[in-house]
Amino acid sequence: MSRPIYFHAPATFARMCAFDDHSERAAFDQALALRVQDLCGRSLRQASRFIHLAAVGALTSVREAVPPPSTGVYLATGLGDQRTPARVFAQTRTDLAAVSPFDFVNMNSNTATYYIARLAGLAGPNLTISQGVLSFEWALHQACIAIEGGLDHALVGGVDEGAPSPAELERRYALPPGESPGEGSAWFVLSTEPTRAVGHLIDMHWLSAPHTADWRRLCDHLRDLVEQDPVLVSSAARVPRSLVTEIIDRLPRAIPRTPPADCGDYPTCSALAVVQGLRAPSPRPATLLHISADGRGRFVTILCHIERA
Image (spheres, rainbow, N blue to C red):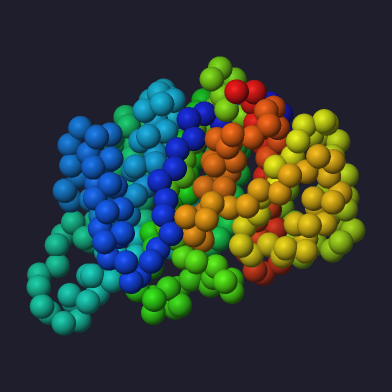
């Protein structure tokens, strides 16, 4: 990268899904609605649950960072709004009730970013990026390109809504064995301004069907970048454990970082891992290495420096 890109105001709102615990779901939804109302000063009555989930993380980050109006919005999502289309299709098929026109609006892929930009007063580039389980990585990549091209600030986040039922989970999510489903919203503001930053992006690497020698060369490269910092290593669910172990063995002062037990897995949970890594009560200064994979042989590594507290 031609110049440092800094992270500001990381924010998260996430949970693990439990289909048989309706009270937990109701409590989460109530907390979500109340938090959005607090951030907006009013309720968003016509907005879908997915829009609420996107807004809660994005507006929390904006409230803390206070970026300028020229800020761009880069929302990553693997599956987007699931409940609104399911409801519309069910109503259309059974003809039990008239379909709300707001439901048709909310199903548009860019409606959530429109809400975020309008509520936060942001007039920069506005993109929704969906590339499966690497959606967040692509959004981060695109935001960095824009900043290197002259954009002042970018609001970047990953948002995915939990499947409404176990059947829908099995149909749409390809969860690795043993992984629990989740949902969440994780955001931060990127800029070239170091003041009040929690960290900065050092490097991103994209690898397609890498062999052992490729990982060894990458580890040698990373070792030169991190100097003497402790390296916190986190990984997405689709990354083989054996690979993570090998990387940890090859990096000096590497510390494995397990994902939060109460958030579950969803397509853009790498955004959550990066945000929580930046906020973790870890040795500081330190370096965060997050590794993602999509199940088709594509890997992405994100290397961040965590600033001194």
